[in-house]
Amino acid sequence: MTTRAALPAPPTFAAGAVRVFSLSLGEMLWSRRTIFLVLVTGAPVFLALVARIVQGSGVVPLRVNGVPVDGASIFGMMIWVFFLRFIVPVLGVFYGTALMADEVEDRTITYLFTRPIRRGAVLVGKYLAYVVCTTLVVLPSVVLVYFVLVPFSQVARSFVSFAIDLGLLALGLAAYGAVFALVGAALKRPLVSGLLFVFGWEQVALLVPGYFRRLTVAHYVQSLVPHAMPSNGVASLLQSVLSDKPPALVCLLALAAIITGTLWLAARTVESREYVLDQ
Amino acid sequence: MIITAEHLSKWYGQVSGLNDVSVSVPPGITGLLGPNGAGKSTFMKLITGQLRPSKGQVRVLGEPIWGNPALYQRIGFCPEQDAFYDRMTGREWVTALTGLHGFDARTAADQAERAIAAVELTDAADRKIGSYSKGMRQRIKLAQAIAHEPELLILDEPLSGMDPLMRRRTVRQIKEWARGGTSVLVSSHILHEVEAMTSNIVLVNNGRIVAEGDVHQIRDLIDEHPHTVSIRTSQPHAVARELLADEGVVSVRFEPGGLVVETARPDAFYARVTDLAASGQFGPIREITSPDDNLQAVFRYLVKA
Image (tube, rainbow over all chains, first blue to last red):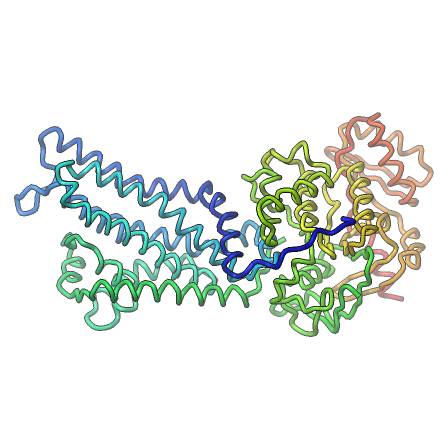
């Protein structure tokens, strides 16, 4: 180190986030959590294959009031039941709350926090890696389910709503991930709090008439779904009766506000928080 | 001064990690010496901006470090913890971390390459870090700390887990970096490790600075206390026979995978063990460690004084 190279200017917030993103994406994609992600997103594909095989053998896999349900409708139901109500929020909780916690637990956070990059940029970079990683696994699963269930002759008719499905699932992953990045940055038991939010607060708030539902992510994501909500239980029935669907633009703006607002707060929290590592 | 701390304190809830410490670290190599739990790690975390002082202030290279990420452009840090992204190769890891300093991809790769060569890991650079030995892991941590050519290197127990030969080479390398103009603060709980690099030391115990300055002033105190050294080797009995010929050796006892030696002449003893390792006469000497008790005795004396 006798002749020091000219040091570049420290990366800007955005450039720092992009560099952390490239460092984290591979780690995230090949982590143990991704195995869980593949298993979770593989379940609907497996069920779609079963439904298709049953259909192929001449048996109608699903009837509502005695009327056979076609592949496109089964696909719509699966988007609701599996992806929107379960997979997207659960992945948001498991990945979002772990964005910083994993680095702290593995004691690798030191390598990121002793670089000329703002801590907030580290969080944003890791969040971007989460969005890309989960999208890369969830969306192919949806595509597979779609092409397994929907006959080729119906593809042209249902393709627009299919594209909307893909977009809103990616948006849902981004929104839930941002909310739980904040939960992970601010709370000591983020996983429990996250699960309570998804399976407690959101479920209750969506059933209560009035403004409470506006304090959920599900309200805005589910209002964008092009398929009819399945009435597969008292809760779903109540939800569909009480539903006040805001216009798509309002939903998109609300989700954008949720993503930027919670990410900003999460970045602020990480900037000021001390992380004491176990030796 | 490269580091100044004024009335620096850090509490973890009710527990005090560092208590009203005022110290100035000059350019060159400085050793931070103290047993585990003495407050070394807390001090290291405060001067690397990982922790915020509860009281007092700390300045590194003339600037406050907490919440000042731009300053890391001038600092290289090798942490104590044995933690990595194990799925990455050594080269990928050092290159990615160097890239966080704002270098373009090609420059980051070149800088990483040079740093890996400096720690003699070029041959293993394309292996996954998960497959590295403890000593190799220590060296790749050093590489990520030096790759951006910092003005100040902060090394937390950098020699732990290295075999005697690699220790000797690493000590030589650290001194070479210092000769090139890099200031180095190195923490250790082994006086002889630090003494091999510098005579300027800061002694920490119970969260306070017990003494600072030239190591030779406390050198005699150290020598008054028998020094315990643990050696991991496949041929403990042969090594013991060889070492017992040394007049400084007070006692030898065997334990699984090695032996523990008590010596009254630590300097000569460490040199002898390193020579034995280099000769390969008794198979590989995998690790030498020194428990904290060596320093504790000296600290007890200093605190009483």
